[in-house]
Length: 114
Image 1 (tube, helix red, strand yellow):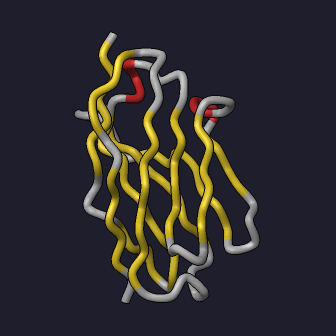
Image 2 (tube, helix red, strand yellow):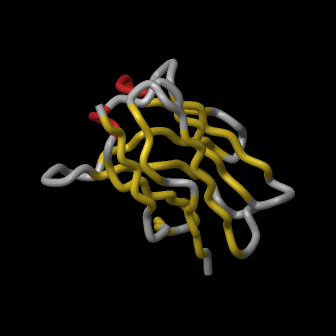
């Protein structure tokens, strides 16, 4: 069983930064991919970034150069550093982990004001 809990969301002005954290319960060793999705009001959930067990990363075009995914395996944490935030980044951000099936966190709200 994998449980994920996000934190770090909040309200920030455009151009600002936030760091989201996701803590994993259980072992990370059987997790093949972790990452972050987001869902804005009225829109579908979209993949933001991911990191494989081997450390390979993927970034959606709309966050390249602004967001960075990282992890601390010893602490069982995954992070999303978000810089140069834009109002269009406003969404609920969900941590996910692929371990057989996809596991989701409860989400954390990020609001970027203009």
